[in-house]
Amino acid sequence: MNKRMIAPIVFGIVGIAILVSLGNWQVRRLVWKEAILAAIEVKIGGPAVPVPEAPNREAHMYLHVLATGEMGAGEVHVLSSSFETGPGYRIIVPFTLENGRRILVDRGVVPEAVKNAERALENGRLEGNLLWMQDPPTFPPDLGKNIWFNRDTEALAEALGTEAVLLVMSHTTLSTGPHPVAVGVNIPNSHLGYAVTWYGFALVWLGMTLYLLYRIKRKTV
Image (cartoon, rainbow, N blue to C red; front, top):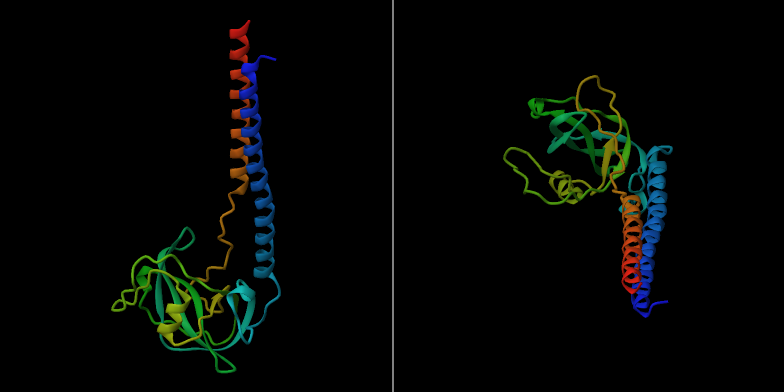
């Protein structure tokens, strides 16, 4: 073998090994992420249980629950937009459970035009999923117009005098009113694309290495 080929071969093997290992790592991450997403989907759609005595984000995020009690006066309007409902506002209200605890309830979305309309309260039994939100900060709320720009559970709880626990309703018993927006998994999972990218780089590296070796061999003939 031509001595001039040794360095490109070593360099090529090392580069390909690194790129393939990065692709393999992304495949392992893909399997891990898919397992997490599947577990969350099971939790969202699992049998509804009563609201835990001491709910917390780590153990009860996305938990499917039933809550019995009464909605209280006062609303917080969180700016929202989706393909299903268009621009509007999420209606967040206080809800007093049978045991006297107060939590937050996300009733769903209303169009901009009916932001300040009177709404019938839904008392009795509610069904939905627990969610702890801390959306990326955008702007501070406009308290004069009662417009909030993100669902920050801690801030909303302070504003409405409740526990920092948010129940997102999955359906409504009213024919008119806020349109419930079911909880979904909004966790990015791009590991397959990353893996394909690293494997693609490895193929390019292999091709460049073979081409370099070909050029070296031609010059020595």
